[in-house]
Length: 119
Length: 119
Image (cartoon, rainbow over all chains, first blue to last red; front, top):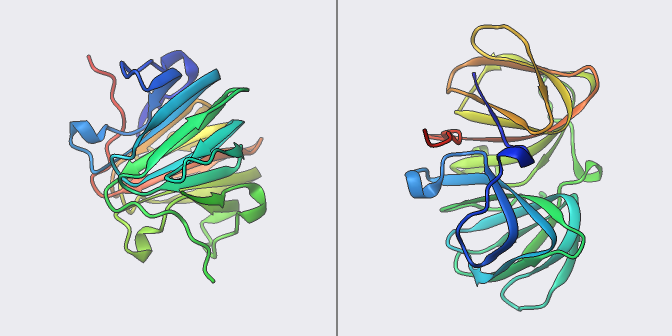
């Protein structure tokens, strides 16, 4: 058993101009270090955003705290609150912004599929 | 963009006797449905537990809310609170229990490695 923290105290700003007011606390090894998928906690300050860009891999964003707005390929921003998640396809343009601030889990990786309730 | 909920209202009890007081809200498709990795929110009620069993895959448990106790291969229970995570190796015996209740993210999959801070 190996222990580590993902609290606000260990989160860091990535050197990425698309990330405005965003602190990241990784949970897993990064895809860029050879992992096939990655999970991280993103804390977005009030007024912050993850600016529009295409998804490198299929991606799930799950809002754990707070609220904001998300958009996908259509560009139409929709409100999102804690307890709600979105899935973006590989290559899909998407954006996340927040007036109040939010904390979200982001999971991404090749072949990722969202949970779909059995019909 | 596809939307879905992972709130308490959609969480369900898995038919697994090792899970006592546990409601699961999946985020991703399950490994048992062909996914290479899976992520889900586990809500453990006060007094509940995920009883001792070996990890099928390398696994990260990240406590999002509440507190509890975790143990790994050594069997020694250690306190854990929101903002802290543990990594268990494939095959490692482990247990999670909580007096106060907790909500945790569990991510698992072949080859999963935890985040390790650069030295």
